[in-house]
Image (cartoon, rainbow, N blue to C red; front, side):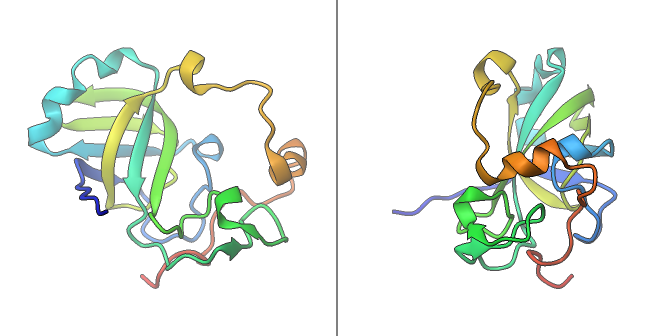
Length: 163
């Protein structure tokens, strides 16, 4: 079985390398822009009524995956699928970001945590009653989320190919 996935646009951010990129949108107040290719602009109709959106994208600079990794927030190795490391068999990223405005083919958002030039695969509205699972267990991350003030919330180059 094979799949064909094609970008619907490109994401532009101030981040040219993986060094010091926020590791999740929750740790970022940086603005970015998603430029949607012209043939998909009509799909943006009524998206401006949402406060947040989910950007689905391709980690185009990710290294080949390893099935055990040391994630950014921990000193211990974990299985790849128990992390959000960008080096994956299918390097798909997701970010819930704050929608600032839409003008034509340009979506301005806050919460950038991706490299400049990242291929955009899809956009979905964020709906808390669908997407927010309250009282969910977060495994090994629990100890890092409760005492995260002392931990780095930015990336390094461990999962990115040389620029």
